[in-house]
Length: 391
Image 1: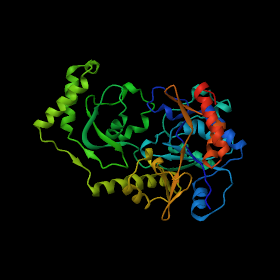
Image 2: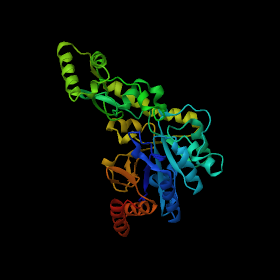
Image 3: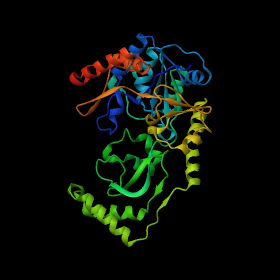
Image 4: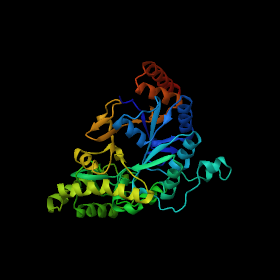
């Protein structure tokens, strides 16, 4: 019989970056250490994918209290903060990496271990960015972090002709820059947001995660037409309250007077892209790290049935999006395992994500495993956190 194994998902661990649009993904490193310290004190044992898979597929025994820790996206702070903390407490985790985001740095950068040993100050660390191959190899060799696949791109693509927005100052469409300059994706976190390449006024079409949509290719002439219009109006164009209506009207006029050259990815093109996304990521990771890569985490939980079928040709298991959760029961798809995950617990207080402490995590996990008493304690702790911000 399968145990109800908590698979806890983290992303960034370290120092929140206030000018990063996804800074809510960062749990402060002191709070993360409280999580790991508490789990160890409560007798939880960390497991990796091989142990998880052996239990789910073949019934191999696991400790009654075990936890499978996941870290999505391959952030540099997984090396700088998460790795030293896990090693300190005898824990281990799994990091899901997109090869397109790997930093080209040749040598491992300083981390929290250097601070503990007096070789650096916290202020000397560079936490914002992405992992390098050297850092991944070091963590693998220590047996602390297991690197697995997050596919190649972790981006969004246009999925249809509807214009839903336009590029404008401070927008959240950095993925459009990634798609135009994939060789620079690894540097976007450490770059000055003001220096981001952008095409102000360019249409933002209906879009979705790269592994769940058929890709739409718009006519670039329309984009250039709108960009030229914005440029001709000068830097104050977006100060006008009606700028978006003006661009929609201009786009409508262009569409009515020009025959657009637009297309949508064919089935053959879609299948070829899925094989590249899933197979090339596995090939690169295995080649660079000299290991087997058998687990895929879907970027952003985005996939469709076609992508899932193709993934079975490359991986023994893939993650399960929240929409398909089975509440602790691993989903078997033939011989393929679907791994259910639970997000690192948090509350939204005063409009911001606030992560909870180790005690809360413990009861959150025990509730997930079916404990009624932990459910009551967890609810009380949540109320306390929401009212007073403590815990």
